[in-house]
Length: 287
Image (tube, rainbow, N blue to C red):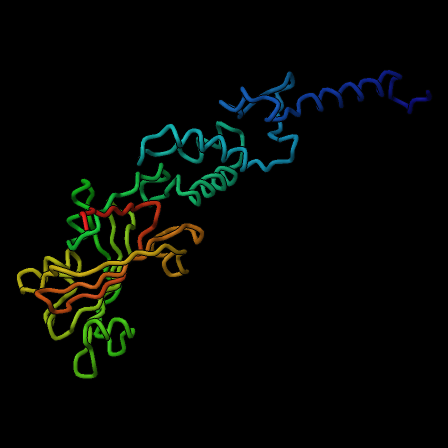
């Protein structure tokens, strides 16, 4: 073989050896399950970082997602995940890859991101007994702090037909419509829309609605003492996805309550609960 000037006859062999060494460094994760414990910075003899690939072409964030799921399942509900930066450095990947994996687990309902607290394992579903009573009181029974964001409080001159029929509304008897977002320890648990006969709650203010509506009704002789409630499952609309901070693929429970006080219709309410955050249970009695 005739070699170019300045190149020895051994040069082609040295280049081939170097190519083989580089190929050897390209380890595949699925071939090294033990490395999943700490599959981050692996170094060859020349100090080069090993490429994090899979022989089947699986995306990095999918591999990280599966590994991260194992970590999350070992955490207690509500316990924080390691920081994104820490996971990225440990596994030798970009933070965006870790972020994609966390987002995937959030869509599964396994992880929640809370402002000021970071990413944490989703709490166990809140067990709510279906009964006539205060939602805030029910949340406190589980040692959670209830808070409320008032979204709307207005006179509704044109309520839906089922509302008008139940409450006996007409042009002279209007409804007060209230929309609220309910939280437990800062986590959105329910989106409520309630109609009340406006004539019966003339002094209803934003302050009362920031707490328990039933606590407002009780001293006025309007506390519901009977009624019915129906439940259906479905998918959230765009507005519910935003307010409840859930994925559009996560199911929700929709409750409709028709309540009476001393035989008088007093409340028509609709509530939307994320199905992975709230578990409803119904006490049964012999018929």
